[in-house]
Image (cartoon, rainbow, N blue to C red; front, side):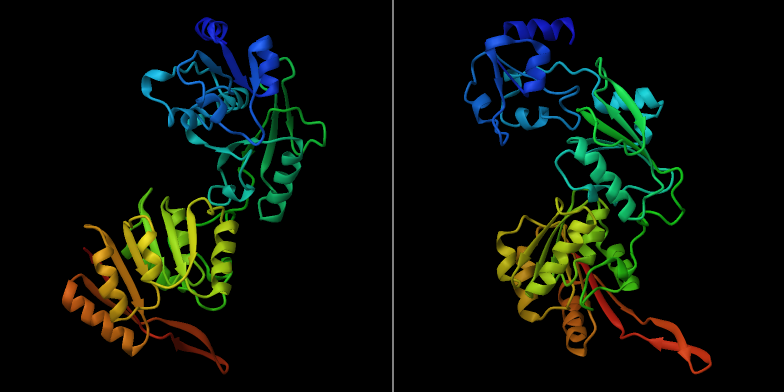
Length: 374
């Protein structure tokens, strides 16, 4: 701690913290351990009094600072950050922190790594405990990242500090972080960053926006970080997944329970459950309580009733993209194009397949796509 933070700690009437922090700070009787499960209510109930909160390192870098500050006025709190776990790991290993990725995996699934791990990528992760080191090692092995170099960093910045290579057994000292280096991963490891992931990466029952059409669809939707997508008739959720991989958030609406299960499975497998919400139901009824969209995708083309109800729900500048393959939906999208404007596209795709001892083109059903900005 710095001199200023020590003065603040000494002047506090009550000090909140984990048992380990309270012991290290030697605050005596004024120390109060956080409730389990964690709850800010005891701290917030003391507003107006001089209260200290002990957290690790930099409280606004994957720490509790932002959570607490959201409940307080700017003049009700002060922070005294020091080098946090990520800075300590980078300093020990000689890594450029700005060129790597930092993740807090102490309370979220290991699958959060799936969108970011690839050859040459470096990731620093905080973990919960000893078992998490073993669990992460198993996840890497089972998901095609077995060649990742793992460095386990234990109790950094203190007298028990230890740094070891590889999965280290059951004697890991908390707090623990792991540095992952993808230098030895094969070139094909990780997810491509362009739109149009292979179909077989998704759980689906055949109801999926196929890879080439999905690439066209994502291009028309134009995802950006933080933007909200309504995915109507989600099917497998493949469009929502790729939207979220681009940094957005999505609400997928699907009427069939088995497909809802597939969407949730895909969100979990891609480490995107925190960005994707899944709603079982039909549009437009299910749409009215969703957060306002920045873009909307209608996967099954829709009918006149859907568009009549949907259009008034869209905020200004919202982008709408709809795909259809039947004559009826093609006619409906042509009607919408005439009424609301935008862009109408027909895509005819064919794939080379075996034809006896030769090869020939097998055509897919033409896809009509209507896109418009309100």
